[in-house]
Image 1: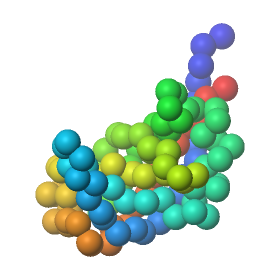
Image 2: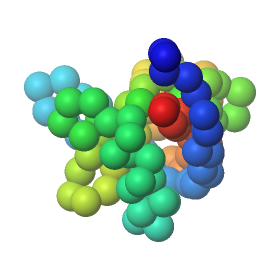
Image 3: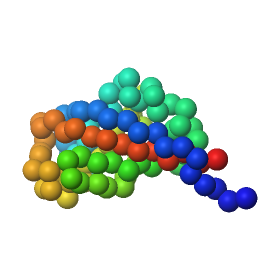
Length: 105
């Protein structure tokens, strides 16, 4: 029997965009700790390499596929350049986010 979606985990939160200025700059929003704790069980089911959790994100009218990055017992949401342009936000702005994680059996 093949894998199939059995349940979706959907969560909403807000967070400030910050920039990590490594060799390539990345923009992120930290998932609040209480939301990260809600992801604990489902993360074990869907994680792939290095604890990454595949999600569908949305903010305003923009929807994108990405993965949550594990960091310090929580998660970071990468905010793609196209999202920042489409939503007219940048470092220091607060972004309202919705995420959907698909559970698999």
